[in-house]
Length: 154
Image (tube, rainbow, N blue to C red; front, side, top):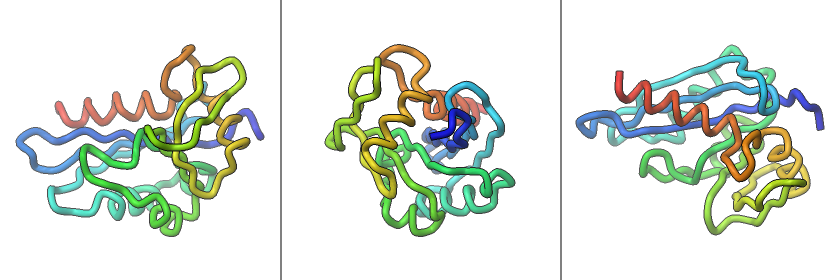
């Protein structure tokens, strides 16, 4: 697996006044280099998976992306279907979530994740690349969550 694998980390935060969610994505090369950012406000009642798929497909980075990394199987309380998202984008999905498979990366704490289109071994290597802080979240997810909260508060 390439050290500079392009990963799109996703973050989401509820918009003020319960108007929907702020959806953010950050493109990372491995866990060290931030290459780009994207965001979209998703109105209440809209399908967050559809909005996420459109955001990914419309990105100038789309052709370079090799993995979509999610913080869970829901975005700000709205459920996502990883199979549908994979079908829409063609990208493997890794969602860090309780109840998923236990993924162990060398020198890191085990993480639970749902995987769609990526093997457990490959997911372990992705975690080795992206978990910069011991026991922390993968950098693409951590930074995307920061961006989503900033958009929400703007």
